[in-house]
Structures are given as structure tokens and as C-alpha cells.
Length: 232
Image (cartoon, rainbow, N blue to C red; front, side, top):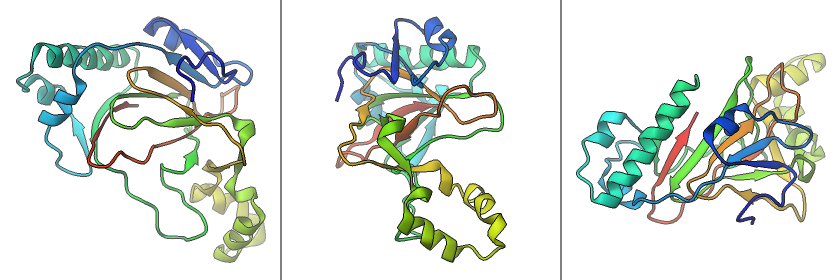
């Protein structure tokens, strides 16, 4: 895994928020990273927040209500500033305290949950922003190191068996149920871990997109440890 990310042609590294939102995706670069080393005690924040469901959205009022040490206050100020920066840029950020995501156990031959490598799709021009403050961090994968699951012969065969409509409706069926968004890492693939504290901007599949969408996945959580994740 990369510590600086600069060795990957897939990643553009920037030094501030303005660069993060204003740098264009180009060529095979479909991930932009505002690389940061954060001060502050994010573990303290996690330990004092209340998990209400497996995924609990944390609002500004929840953060402000916490009694924190000086390092905990520093961490809180960073999170609040990140939320404000993204909101001011037109995004709709969400801060999540996360135990685990729901697993897709409907089919034994294909997984379509967020632990599977996948891309995001939108009908409008948008990007995905991610920042893990605490806990396990997500991975991205160069597009050439992955194959769409629907192109794997044994999976495609079973999907055709599952499809009950007309043959010419099969591709529409794959999109309607999001099967086409999921990928399998090729042998010897080298995922890039997104690390802690960095804000990432990932390319999304939308009509105006000029690069391939960024393939990513949620990590398997560390035992007994929650994640604190900003996402939009």
C-alpha cells in the first residue's frame, strides 16, 4: 500500500481543499487526494458518540455536545471545518459512526454490497468524497486491474438464468439491479488503501464524466472498532 499515493498514476495528490475541488480528472487519474496529517484525538470522539444503529449519522449538535479533552476538541474542529468546507462547495456531507454495513447474502455467486469493489453512478454530474477519521479505511483499485463481474462467464451465465425477461432486456436488467457496477480484482491486483485523515474525491459514472469511474470498496471493519467516516 502507498503512504504518499504519488506513485500511482490513478491518484492526483493536492495540498488544499481548493485544489481538491477544482482539479480536473484526466487520463487514468480518477481519484484526487488532499493528503493531510491530522492532529487531534479522533478515538476519543468515537468513544463518546452513541451508536444507535449499525450506521448512525452524527450531526453537528451531537459533536458539539461532547465533553472532550484538548486533543479531542482539536479533532472535533477539524471535522466541523471539513463538513463546512464541503457544504459551502455545494456538497451534502454526512458524518457516520459505523459498526458495519449490511451484507448482501441474496446470491451466492455475486455480491453487490459496498464491501465488493464497485463504482458509483449518478444521473447528474457529481463526485464522491470520502474521509476516514478513525478505523479501517477504504480501498480503490486501478481500472485495468479489475473486471466487471457481469463479464465473468460463470457469473454472467447465472445472471442470465436469473433474468426472466426477454433476451434484449438483459442489459437493462443488469443496470436496474446494479449488477454492472460491481467488479472483481484481477490476480495480482494492487489496491490502494485510502488511509486516515485524507479527503478523497472519486470519479463517478455520470453522463458528463470524461474518465472511467473510480473503483472502490468499503473495508472489513477491525474487530471491536467503529469507523468514523465522512462521505458525500
